[in-house]
Image (tube, rainbow, N blue to C red; front, side, top):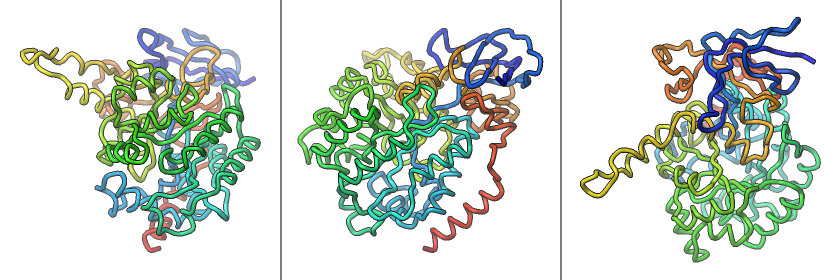
Length: 470
């Protein structure tokens, strides 16, 4: 069995919370697919040694919410400055019908490459590109491209049995599926790809695109029950804007979280993207049921939706994870920029809540409530928890060897007193000396195996020209 020794790291951030968030190391041994030891280790005969001098080690990031097909519709001028609902019509729904197999595959490659070069090893893609008579299998492409790059893929099988008004006049590629067709495909995908093991490289999740709009209430219940009978988790969007709150209240006379609760869509096997707009009762309900969140701060900021109340959710017992969302609402869809934004935004939001002492407040104390180590935990062990991948997300013996090794060679990292915080606090993109997923090195010195970046750049430019003309 092959072994690799990552030796003499300047810092090791474990993905755990509190005092356990750092390991003195300075060495990590990988044997096969797993971490065998962390400490002061002596090289073994024939062992590959990776010099980590002046480098920082993190667990590979776990991205719990993405729309990879959107990697070809970044920076669309028609939707760049719009809020969510107007943006949906202006950008993703306008372009969605144009995606054929070739465009979809190119978009997936771009998104996976961007994520991998930020140190991400696991991608949960909420793919909703499905329609009756579709001539290619977008699910198969996601798994194929992830396998080609050596990344873990969690397919959140989206879709809808009804359409919103903003989709009503759009073409065949936005027509809804029948519930039987939707559930039948989830069952097909489960048989083909789903691996329930804690170290799985492939998972399938039941994920109607957005509960109040994509399906009838009774259909949501049937989806939840079918998912649980198959041993699948559940995922969707929820409560991204005040418009979302208003429309759900208008349709059902209750809050969005109460609506999903009444249709069996809460629990420790469920996580929602966004959850920006919540009242106290909703936060308590999410916490008491152990329902998780994929926090997407850059997309929420880009669309003007707001900042999710992560500290309140965390205090209530909600598992916190990080997602980059689609590149069409987040032109920097990588995990380094996402965690940097999360750190800044949560501290800024805490500061906004502060009140001076003379007005009965407590001064500036709350703005210190989020640390860089907290954000690493959200993006690693937190992601593993909401996905149910118990063997990843932390750096410890017997855990899967999903490891990102960063070289802090850019001037933005010069002068750091605590180099461990560099990737989160300094932002940018640190050089990726190595990325291991399940013990296999898939990135070496910023090069992802099996990907010709120049060729992909050319494909992307041609694809964008085609989309803009067409």
